[in-house]
Amino acid sequence: MENNNTISTLLVANAYGPADVLTFEDFDLGELRNGYARIKTKTAGINPIDARRMTGEFKHAGLPQTFGTEFSGEILAIGENGQGFQIGDAVLGSGDGFTHASVIDVPIGNLIRKPENISWEVAGSVAGVSQTAMTILDEIGDIKSLLIHGASGGVGSITVQLAKERGITVIGTASKRNLEYLESLGAIAVEYGDGLIERIKAVHPDAIDAAVDMIGTEEATQASLATVKPDGVIATIAGKPVSSKRVVPIWVKRNPKNLQFVVDGLASGKFQWEIDTVYPFESAKDAFSKILEGHTKGKILLQF
Image 1 (cartoon, rainbow, N blue to C red):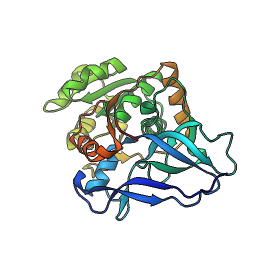
Image 2 (spheres, rainbow, N blue to C red):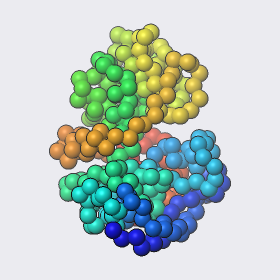
Image 3 (cartoon, one colour):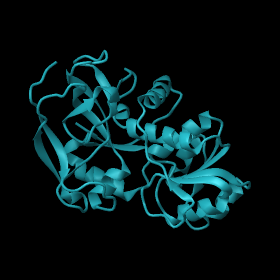
Image 4 (cartoon, one colour):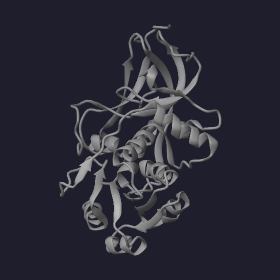
């Protein structure tokens, strides 16, 4: 085990606001704890919740803030009980506090090996959304049809494919420019905006078993209430206030086995993965601004 102290450059916000509040700070990681691996970060995905925490729309901790929940990278040092991992191994997984940093310490149990035929970009953007998607489907339960609002984003893209694999008919809403992409994933694609309820009913006249909102709009809530059967689950992962008690929040449950399932599917070509934009770490402000614009197709990530 190597316990040499390491300086990491991490992304920090000392105030709430637009991307201009982001700064870079050097941080001494200290000695590596037992049960942890020290990782040289290659890429790290950005999720909408990161940007919403930056602006202060979603607050779950005080200032200063650090960001990121997923990563890919190489092991620089490994603690005791390395579980078969070694220095130099290419890995991916969920972080432990932040991943938008040049070097991070991660619980060994959060790691899985990066397949050689998966790029660093894909590997660094998959952990959070994969485990979120699996959590959604596990908690919604046995259904035949599913309405997904904001289905072209990172979580939506993999949820569509995982649902289709389970034999579920998926109706996915997105902006006009992303409808063809959704169809390529196997969803019945519907453009959101005025007339959404009528368009959903036109493509799926029967009441839908369940819905999940990934964008957090009142339009999504009302469309779900109007198209989901009375005893069907209506869920949200957006973390925003909702106008109906029928809408229940779902929070991701980390499960490396679920992540491994998705990664194996990506490696075999069973699942598709879309990268929207890759930004160098020093352009993190641009990346976070892009996230706030919405309408992404797949994932936005930082490259180190």
